[in-house]
Image (cartoon, rainbow, N blue to C red; front, side, top):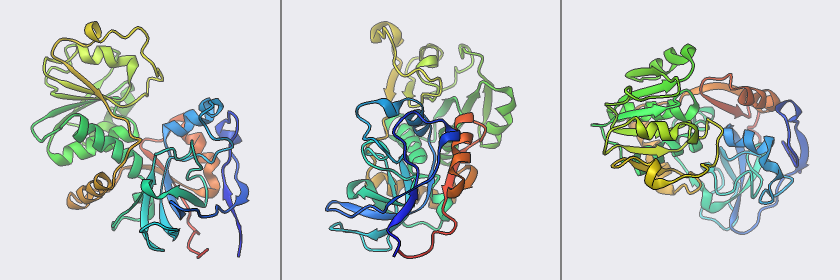
Length: 328
């Protein structure tokens, strides 16, 4: 029996074209943790940030295998309630930062952040759901309290999270306004289902009067303008950081949040069994399939990282293990 696996390991800032596969030991199971055969995983902007600069932070357990989500099968359930062969999704909770993540053939994961799911989707389709759809779901339903009566404005919609948010809110029955700062991508957000598409020139004043809820995906770079562009009573959820500004200097909530406008935010580090089940149930009931930009085989992980960093893929990037059908 082979006791090693292929994995990406980093311990310093690493450019996409420097990402390589290494041979490392398959993790040994311990109480409270389960061993998962990774079938596929989605790629995320936060993994790019980890490679670019976050890897130098003290709180990163180096060397680390990146990857904050995956789908796969339980190989060894340890002392958990899982059964060998259970189909699972896993995400967040320190995955790929505090402990090794999904850029590997096998992952040792804490049982409390692993969730059994029933789904008719293929592995690569399932892999597009966990982090992206959990973040969209939490932003829309937990933070924005969205209903079918709402007109939702999504600022910065041409990303995987934006496409997922359009899909979920449209399936609920909402009217959706979506923005992009690239004219060439207006057709993309329209084809994703947006009722109205706006070319974002840096200000939305006078362009978002009908919005009742706002999902802000660019982040702090445009958040003040967003709040000043909507009517009293509107809820704004700041979820994304596409603008690459991560802290708001000299933020004065009394002056910077307009009277009667509500500001909230969604942090995706705490998934629950109930929400994960709700997402997959909703996808089934509405006959939805996740929106995937491109699929890479694991052996081509470097190409997937390059595509992630360059932002050339419209939608979620998924990495799969096409030959990963053997039993450990």
